[in-house]
Length: 273
Image 1 (cartoon, rainbow, N blue to C red):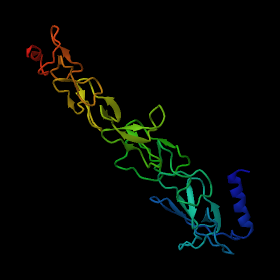
Image 2 (cartoon, rainbow, N blue to C red; image 1 turned 180 degrees about the vertical axis):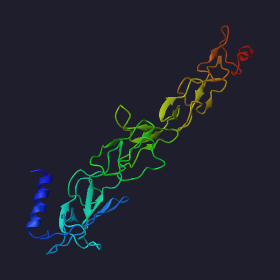
Image 3 (cartoon, rainbow, N blue to C red; image 1 turned 45 degrees about the vertical axis):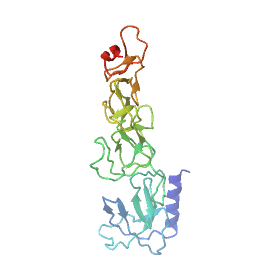
Image 4 (cartoon, helix red, strand yellow; image 1 turned 45 degrees about the horizontal axis):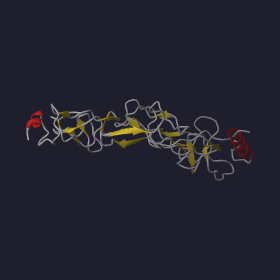
C-alpha cells in the first residue's frame, strides 16, 4: 500500500468508529489569502479529539446547514503535501520550505529549499525581487522547484526568492549552467567584479584591495612601475629601465647602460648621471 492509500484507510476507520456523524452537516471553508489558513469545523454524534497531522472538515450535505461559529466539524482528513496541520487547522508550508509527504505536523514541513533554488510559496511579489521571479501563490512539494536564475543572483538554502549579488562581489555554487548559484564572495585583490563576474584588472592598472567594482580598479600604474594584467601592487622597474606610467612592461634605455638610473619616470632619466 502507498502512504496515501494508508491515510485513506485511516480516515475510513475513523468513520467506522462514528467520528463521522450519521448525518453530517455542510460547512463553510474560510480561506485567508495572506496566510493560506483553511478552517473547517466539525461536530459528530460522539465528539472526539483530532489526531496530529489531520485537519477537520465536513462531508457534503444540504446547503445552509453549517455553523457560523465553526462548531460543526464532522470528519478528520490527512494534511496533504505542501501543508502541515496543527490543532485541527491546515496551513500552507511557509516560504523557504517545501513539503512532500502527507500528515506533516510542524511549520518546518519537509525542510528548507535546496541551495541554488527558491520557494516563495504563497508570498506576493516583492519590490526587491528579480524581475523573472515566479510567484506560484501555492506551497512547494520539492526542494528544487524553482531555479535561482543567472550569475547576478544567488539563492542560499531556504531562500524566499533570488537575491541580487552585491557590488564588488561574484556568485558561487551551483551547476555549470550558472542558474543555481547559492552564495556570493567578495572580489579578490587584482580583479574587479562587474555584473557579478570576476575579471582581472587590465594591463597598466592595479587593484590592491578586495571588492573593486569596475575596470579602473584601484588606479593607473604609476611612473617607474609596471602592471601586467591582474596586478595587486605596482611592480618597480629594473634599475636600468624606466616607465612613464600605465604600462604592462618597463622600457630599456637606449644603448648598453648598466648603471642604475637616478630616476625612472621618463626616458630622459637614461641620460642622467
